Length: 61
Image 1: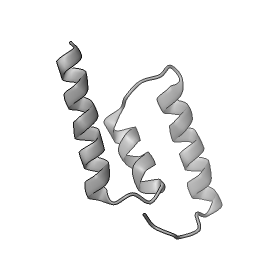
Image 2: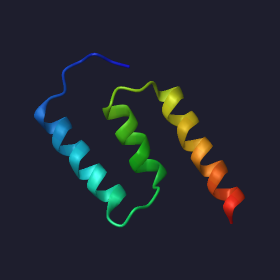
Image 3: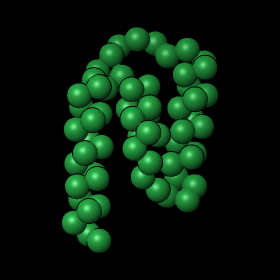
Image 4: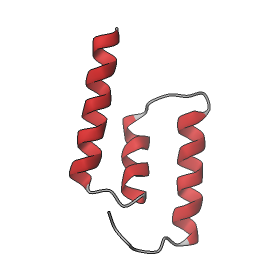
């Protein structure tokens, strides 16, 4: 994870994305990707998480 200090625009964007993903609760890969990157996770880790969740969702339907 990155140790950079976020700027106010990043914090506001993160708040918007979190609101979007939780009202109503839903999984939107593009939103989750941006959240993960804003939080400082490596691109590979974010993609792994998204693929994992999508695989879990596909086994439930």
